[in-house]
Length: 66
Image (cartoon, rainbow, N blue to C red; front, side, top):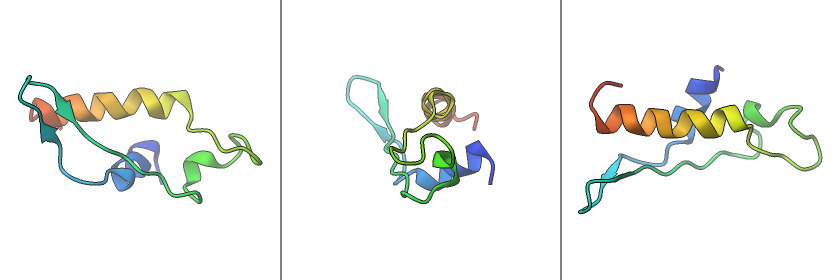
């Protein structure tokens, strides 16, 4: 599974457009997500590169260019 596939699987629903023009998209990663393998075994931490990819995906969906 690629990082983008993992993030898309973690997406909990459709983007929510807020009255102020911002967009909200929620993610929930399961404990056994491959993203956590080796990052760190006893204290799983979502890698920064995944955290940076989530707003990029949200922006692409908001701008309809995903």
